[in-house]
Image (tube, rainbow over all chains, first blue to last red; front, side):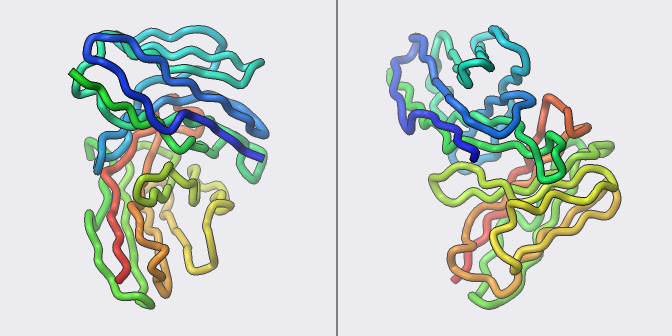
Length: 114
Length: 114
């Protein structure tokens, strides 16, 4: 089956660093995505990992270990505007065997406090 | 257009009525997804279109749900005989190809069934 797990909620302090973990079990794998979603808005793309290792993009970094079915999103120098839900998604096999199904976790609500 | 466009942005309908939700993907994007997101929950995969290939309908929750796409352009999600549990935001996303590492979401269509 398909299972993507993330913590439900996290809190952090402005200026700090926070790590949001994601573990997955899917029938196939062809990339892992992180999205940010503010309340009432559409998800916006943050990062994509398909090979093991760390991808850095400004204040945001994402790590992937395919053998462990594990990823994390690292947010540095937290700002109040980073308060949002963070969604982990895995591209899994579709019904025809091709990789066309993006499966999302339930998301992690991050609250940044002054 | 510049981004994924969805309409209507908000729809209130009576239980038992049919609704049509429209998605206009980014020009040139061959892959198109529909997701459902209930309040406070994660994204639930509904259906995927890739070019002229047969769509992956494995996420449609019942036969009241159907979707069409003409070539690589507009898609319509139809919900027949709406029920209160259909109340959710319906998100459309598109990417250049099935392997695209950036998938863009529209603002969503907020459906309320009363």
